[in-house]
Length: 146
Image (cartoon, rainbow, N blue to C red):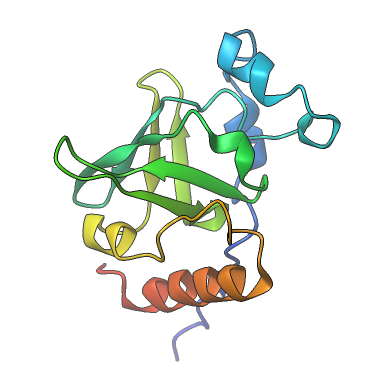
């Protein structure tokens, strides 16, 4: 008999202690991101500009505007020089953070990240969008290659 898999919790950091260890809290981007009172204790501060590494290669980087999304999300610039694409990753997709290499490793493929509902600053906080985003990543967790 196989044990039941751990359910995917899209809005919960897996290991906050690892995330906080070694983060850069002295950069101008962090200072700007923490000016708002409700953003002062974000565990993602210090990840701005980190490369985002999917299971099958680089997908982009943590966008400088990350403070515009709630702390349970990361805003990823996944565009190329030819296309503009910003997507939101729920923090539950983060497998680990390598501060030395400045990389955030996620347990999704490049295609899974690129096919996520695109970030729209005008509708991001809408309950419908967050539900769609959570459902998308929860379903992708079930279909992630081993």
